[in-house]
Length: 248
Image (tube, rainbow, N blue to C red):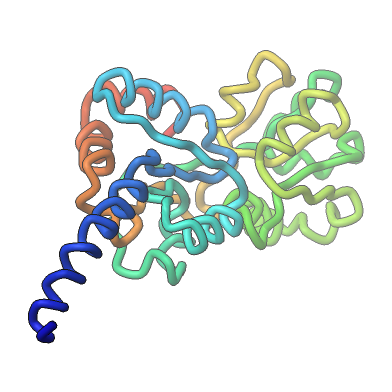
């Protein structure tokens, strides 16, 4: 058999296998991942998107270190929603297209049994004996809370009373259960648990770095049908109204 004939036969055998592998790889829906503090709006967005478009999405939530690890290891994460400043430094998102989503806001929330402070700085009052915050190393609102404490001069005073947990929803769970007196979360989560806590106050935006929330399209997924349709959906009045309703 001459080399040309052998090559032709091998190509005829291999190409259908490659096509089958490609189809299998794209049979699973793409993953949309986000910081745990945005589970409610992202879940609602996905539900509305699927109902309108017929496309399916898979959702994943956690601290941003977990989200980026999943993106780097799975190859299936197509879009990540989170803090622009953090996402721009991620190697897996180098050159990613960024879609503006909204602005995140840090709030001080308190448990139902705790007194309402007149302003966030009043959390220094000893009546707030247990104060929770997300981990500043992995959660943008932990970083924002840490900056607030430093810039307001409260860091040293509150250090013995601080309880650091992984994510915003964990702080919210402690607030709702009364295991802490106060805690730093984002406005989005505060709105989601408003019936289970005493209340919240917005922290002065000048006392922490701006939190610009974006949806980053993971390189390699730009032409995926679900991703292109989701990008278009995010620009619709319906999606914009939903985001505003969730404090973005």
